[in-house]
Length: 152
Image (cartoon, rainbow, N blue to C red; front, side, top):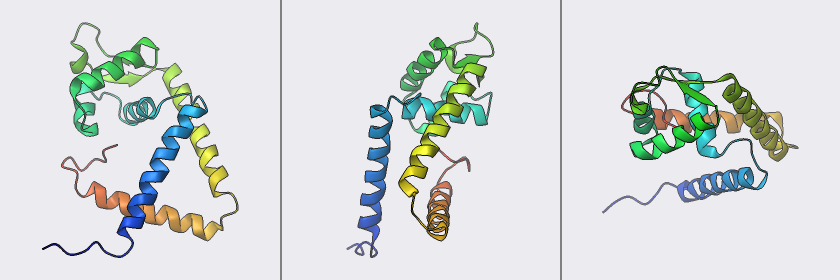
């Protein structure tokens, strides 16, 4: 028999799920510069240029064909480029174009503004405590990752 969940786990889970769902829905409603997936892929590639589609599929725990389709769309929009168009798409080292970096910066700013609006009226200490708690939670996830690198 398993132990019952520690006090508050169900509440934390429910709140995190709701925050995630609302953030994705808000981005769709406000015609965000990028979808959640596009933003995530661009952010990872910008932070670590040279990543390949196969690396991203492993990091996101997604099917390679799914990632390939997403990357093809980003390339078609001129937001990413491969180091060598002759190589198969999965083998190319990817980088974010200037256009992609600009759009990513706009997306980050829009997301930060939306978060700031929701935290308006919070005490600075409460915002700091939230950041610290989320950092601890992310560290716990990082410990489970085989590569040692954070997955998205």
